[in-house]
Length: 481
Image (cartoon, rainbow, N blue to C red; front, side, top):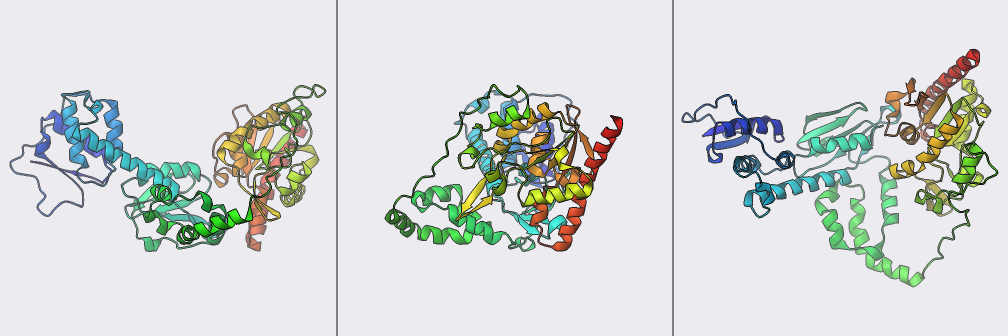
């Protein structure tokens, strides 16, 4: 009997190396016992009757589909997975098409394991909830999750892409994943007691969840199939689920009794994407008129109007924000609200004349959630940013600035075409593919949201320092001219 001890529960490379050596030494599956370091039984030791494995010199091939399947199935929590995979590998040497036989017991069992791992990874992506620890620049976001299988290392890159601009940790009993803005790292598992229980935004999230719950469309079985009860205890909205379900019948009756509300009346809009012939072909004015009829995403339906960029046709600097806010949506001009006033003040202190720069947004329509008479700003998502990127690219081609300033994560994603961490890239000029320089900084609305006055003053100074780089570049260009 050959005893194989792997380094970890997810040690695919260790399993593959051992399995290859065993197969080349013609060791049948029945002659192998698999375990993981630290989990060996007390009597686990090399059998005296087993011949030592010779260094393998030959080779053999298996379908690439098996390797992909094994990499996923080995993350299953069933200890028998190592033996089943080796038995399947052993049999594939004689029957290269074995994986096509879905009714084969080994093939079927590995397929079920792989499906369970994929589902668990999907649930981790969906049900991880971060809680903020610390504030402002010192903040760190921590989540607790209890996976069914050994999926943390496989699932972590998703969160690094999705939350690239914030430092986070996902704690689990198996292994903990951490992102510092540069790389993902892993440490030993922890107890749930090490995770934060609540943060300052918890109640806001619960109110939002309650507001979007539709009792008339409630299907309890379908909901529990997609969001099993075992995940509820780690979700901020969990305390609302049972009361909302219990009151769904009464709430539906109230909705019927009150009757239908008047539908939102969309304003009359110009035909989409029609250019007026009176405007020059590639001018900002022509683009502004064309964008007035943009229907590339759904945001135009509720916004008052398209809020296009504004500034000199051949500005040397182009400032890119996130999206128009409530004031901008009503006025039809970018940066005229509180964030715009903050920007004007910072530009003046940095020595930049706003009248000489072109100011625009990555997304040209206001995205919001109505709350009575108030319209609460919502961050644009990736599809909305991508749909609107054509306008940024055409503005860039029309103005041909020397420097583009991306203010905030949404603007940075539009300028660079991918999620770009702010703090990691601040304070330095970055070369874009077309030769234009880019500068990354925070959005002025970030400064408005800071509750601590000392932190607000400190971050405002950093923002002005970033804009001083803009002023320096403008002065250099003026001297060169």
